[in-house]
Image (cartoon, rainbow, N blue to C red; front, side, top):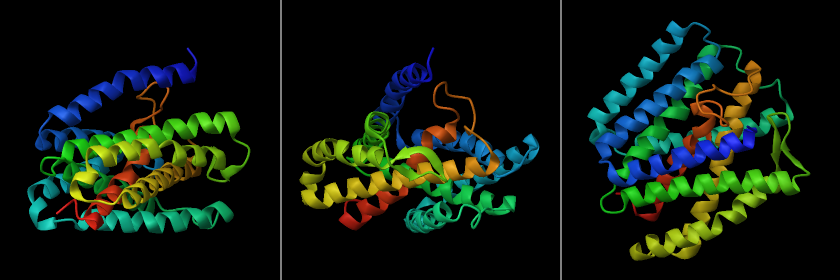
Length: 277
């Protein structure tokens, strides 16, 4: 079976399960489910950071689990701080990627501790943002499902437009397969999804269409940054995939890399638009 066939089959099997969970499960269950996914990704990130020992990988993952547990317990006191920290950090990550794309050696993390800190800032704000979005009264599950459809759509449009029209590399030193044509395909392809999202939800809260579309494009750009950041981390370690848990997709981190950046940026956008209070 080809890698594309495995990719499509895995998506067809996993997507309905994720959609059903988002719509049907209460937010406490969603927090636990996403917590498990994030901890599996944390094991892979620890390996990418240079922790070869499984015991050390597990220990670092348990540290993240403790942070998630504390956040779940003290969520009201933390308010939206992790979301804002996550969104700001991804802005910094974008600057780091721009520098690394021009000077590949300049920002290499020779110390595993720096990459582990990156991992905390990649994974924890994403988990927190996803849980807070789902917990929004009345519209939370629908907004989370919209975010997932936006990211899945962008990923698919980028993949197929890149394969069909890709000529100009986006960041060859970080991820040789990504092209500017793929980025353009992702940005254009998600506009109908964003339009439907506005018609179904956002317009009922007096959010202007242009602001909603601008947020959608910003979220897609963030998802691309998240993908590139993980590719950079893997490239430093000489890894093709973060793991092999999901056929055709690699590891868990390979599957959620775009979402780790998109979630806090989307949540910050909801705050700015007044939808999240």
